[in-house]
Image (cartoon, rainbow, N blue to C red; front, side):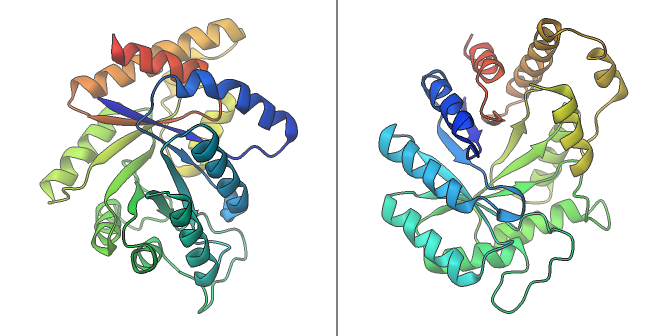
Length: 272
């Protein structure tokens, strides 16, 4: 099976040094590709381009930048897409992005992810486009059916594959994947795996995006040392990855948060 890794653009000189120090270990795992995220509301898209440029040029890595429509005009997005294409990038992930409080779009902006996808297909038709999906539903869903109808709209607009939001209930992802197939969604549905590097940080993010964190899972990390936290997290994510592999998953996307230890453990477990 294959896997991919996700990084985010460092915001400080120290964070940049740490990522550069960790890259040899992470890239030695031989990911199928690496994605580079944007900040909230598309705030770091220039930083995304700079990191993609460095990875592509200095490390010869197949890159997949995130492209968010929030905070960027159609013209700005087209210019960035062309810049990536000139660099030799042939894959991206198209996201509407989270709307900040008080955000209002106009005629110069895309208002949905499927509009963004259609726009990218016109500007760089040769680029493979990935999108997000939500096995447990999106916070803006009005019904349980929306997670499928919205995904279908993205694929009909021209997307090629989809990566899930983080999840801790493996059965929820598998049920979603199988329901996608039943509904005629033939594009690859890949799981997004979030190693629990920092329980407070990861569970806080999960709470904001509507991912279910079982109480029993939270309890496992209570009053634990750093060493104990790592051992528990390793057991959880490796078991999850191996279960997904056993259920026929052919590709996994690892949200590294620019860290290497747990991502390395997951890949080693999959290769044994």
